[in-house]
Image (tube, rainbow, N blue to C red; front, side):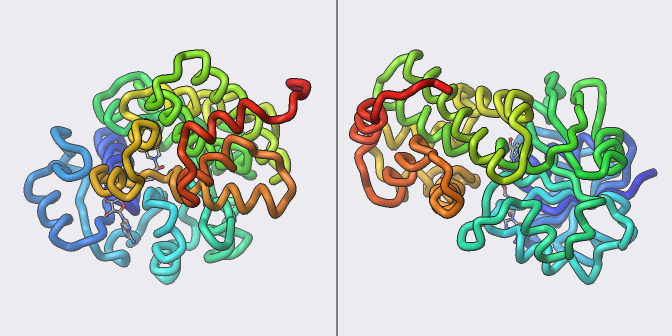
Length: 333
Ligand SMILES: NC(=O)c1ccc[n+]([C@@H]2O[C@H](COP(=O)([O-])OP(=O)(O)OC[C@H]3O[C@@H](n4cnc5c(N)ncnc54)[C@H](O)[C@@H]3O)[C@@H](O)[C@H]2O)c1
């Protein structure tokens, strides 16, 4: 029986915990607060973040990091991106030295402008790369928890680590591909949320399918430019963690980032929309990081820049679309 620690008991952490528990693995799920762990252990359900989903007996919740990590062979990190650094700092003294570390969080850290893998190496040291895996792709937590067919990617600079994550998480409804490009996988996973805000806003403004398809396609082009500038591979963005997740997030009704964009397009205020969401919408923070990162390393990201201006400078979404349409004419590639 493999011992797995899942750090973060939101929708995605709970869905992954359920999946691993159902495979017969011993799962410790780290909650943020003690009363959440008590409720989860009592009700065998996470009513706040993944309602209506029964959790297997081999999953236990705890709010104590030392208890969560004791003897863990695999550690899956699924906290929001702005909590990653502090959670890793708390985990460091308790982390078993051989444990595989899988990052399922999607985002780019504000301030440092680091990918999640860079934050991991910053806190735990560069050697962690050989047992670090980026886990990403088109995967709504509710659908995975309901056993609907899903395909994702496990990426690492170390092929053994990617394969270990693949075998640990695979089941007959979750197909996992390996990749040697954690940078491309992480940039794709983080930036698709920003483009989803744009696609949602376009839908909220009442623009049609043409506009959404244009945003997805040109969004993918600018995500690819950033990924390559960061050392990733262009072809990764044609895969599950790029195009796959982008399509899901820009079109799926369950997408929180698309929903936030949609409401902004309809004229609601950002603070108001976020207050009613009840879950993390990573694209809001990632838009800020990506905007500054693109400026710092000299990558042209016009859609991301407009999303940033709408979110952080109060630019009306309709004007953002007009400005995108009036950019200088150019070749597609
Ligand atoms: N929901 C999905 O379908 C999905 C799918 C793939 C990836 N992701 C990614 O997974 C990450 C988490 O998303 P989610 O949907 O589970 O979020 P969520 O909003 O459902 O839950 C976030 C969880 O993190 C916990 N948390 C916050 N700060 C913490 C801390 N300091 N210590 C411990 N726990 C803390 C919260 O208590 C909450 O349980 C995000 O980066 C998201 O992009 C989500």
